[in-house]
Image 1 (cartoon, rainbow, N blue to C red):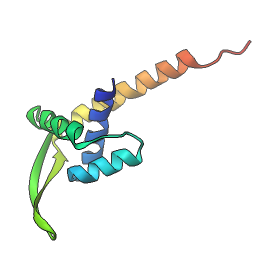
Image 2 (image 1 turned 135 degrees about the vertical axis):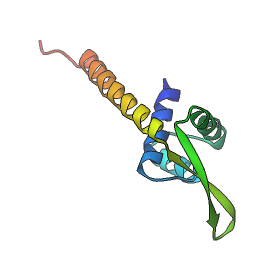
Image 3 (image 1 turned 180 degrees about the vertical axis):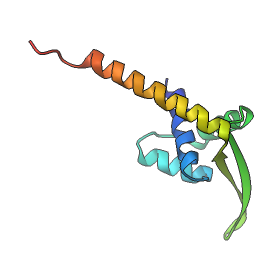
Image 4 (image 1 turned 45 degrees about the vertical axis):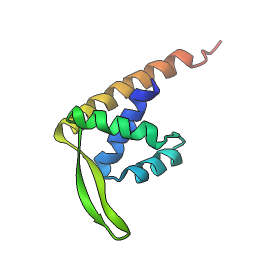
Length: 102
């Protein structure tokens, strides 16, 4: 379940703006989704192979060029579908665990 949520969160980040992986890790950690490079890079690779993200190289002021990831049109549609599913799941779970009035 965490894998699917992490995928949705990464797509959400790159939907806002192109992102460098270490920046993604920082943002995910700030959201209390602890992620390490060993988790993020394979996920980005799968998303790229699926056509959900793409990347471009950008010169860095401090070192070699950096690879920035951005969402594709297919990825934006997929993220929208995931978001709708997430909202439905969240509603169902909240309903199920809500204490009933006696």
